[in-house]
Length: 258
Image (cartoon, rainbow, N blue to C red):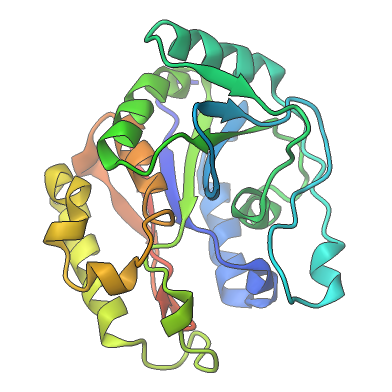
């Protein structure tokens, strides 16, 4: 399998499972993709330097959220570990003198398993999560470049974040039907434009180039996985939106690159 696409997706919170439209969109997306040999996830919810590999065996999930109903803490996703993929990642990064650590007890966090439950519900694809060693866009873009050869081995690389992410300013009652705030729509429109035109430099400098950037991302960890995706893509101009719209005022734009 060659040229596996690379994704950036907005992963939502655990209640994504209650959103029939979004879950259907994620399931439809995965059905249109070639089934991967393994999945490598970079999530907004794991920052650790040096770059660290998560468990290569099946261990309990990380329920890294608070205040939700008990049923969200009962979700299981026992995907196989990916020790062969971990070995490949170590080799790819060792050749570039990028240090790699391991955290064998760390399971998948909700940035990884929440969308995967919808996309690959059988949990039959090996999954490896790796940390973000930095929030610097160019560091992460370079990391994506180093991981790009995995795509020719059938590995699906996923950057998992949220296209706009300001929890203190999100609209609690509008769901998917209300009018999103202007800061979210402005940033989302700008992001759509620069992705479609392949303006990687603007994306890497989004904090200075994008409208409402400081409000859309008061902290940048949810946009940062996009830079790994961009680095791993063979042609950043080939990005396309697969899912758009808003969830409680936050843009859930999700992208696929060839």
